[in-house]
Image (tube, rainbow, N blue to C red; front, side, top):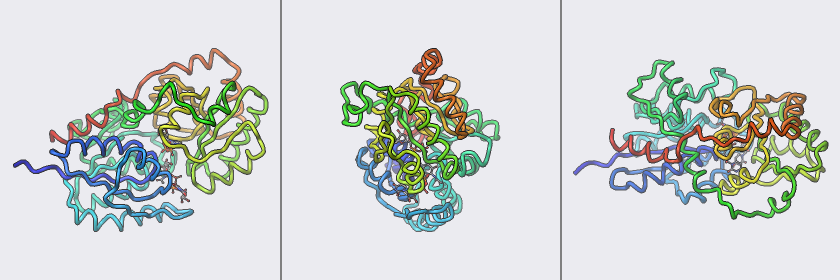
Length: 368
Ligand code: UD1
Ligand code: UDP
């Protein structure tokens, strides 16, 4: 009898969960081939649990590390120390981590110390600026140094890995598993009271959370958004806000009292994708949203100085606007006023695969 492969997945934040749960479910569907174990670190709590519920994924282990105001030291050391016994007990053939969070970095480091092969889902993204985004660029580069399987979403991310000397034998271009979810969520008959409220106006969708933008950059973003919207009475904004209390404080300080902007709790992913589909444009510093928006043809002003997602820039959907108040003000105003610019940015394209990335990854693991 052929022994089943023991695959253990580790993730802990909302975006990792959104992109790993489709893979968990694909591996579980192939239960004759894989023994699948799910470890969540709980780097996020409410925002992680929301996703687990949607995808009906029940973790085998929950490290429950989240604490208010957690530092990078807290996350990294808690994951590293608490994972050791689980890995020693489970003895997986391969551990899959995702992307660039501190959960992923610490989990990969734990595997390296125990000499367990690592599969990196969403490998090869680069800005080449180690402080931007911070600490994510370091995390993803570090995971790629010690990985055995590279699941690159695009040819560009594959090339980044090759340029760093990684063996082509270990790289597979699979598309992004985030698109697997998007394929099933957006629906023409979707409705929601917040969308009813915004009906008849141009809907601006906002998110922001990057660590390097906490503090003054975030205040500048919010001030610019409010200034532009005050000049455009035909706009309404919905801002499903991250649970980070520092983000919430800045947002409430700058945006409270402005009635055409609703700050609401984080949306479930099905809702969020449908809000994206209903929006006129999106303002964000998120990574995952930069991948989802091109598929929906929604213009995105990316409030960051760098991006590891050049495919969306080339597709024309994304524009980097940094975090300076005047630049955001200028670019946001222009996109609302200039119909040609808006039309150019609204072309739908699909640089991140065909929505079957999880199957391709499972195929690779099955056949190796
Ligand atoms: C983390 C990742 C970032 C990813 C982001 C996605 C790192 C270093 N950062 O950043 O790469 O883009 O997740 O959102 O890995 N909180 C809650 N409930 C939650 C989630 C967060 O209360 O469900 C609060 C807690 O007070 C926590 C704080 O938010 O201390 C910050 O969370 P943390 O995971 O450290 O940072 P993020 O900015 O979310
Ligand atoms: N998202 C969500 N609910 C929200 C906001 C975002 O489900 O209220 C989804 C979004 O569709 C994308 C992911 O969360 O798939 C992005 O997560 P986040 O911006 O927190 O992290 P990043 O992608 O920047 O690491």
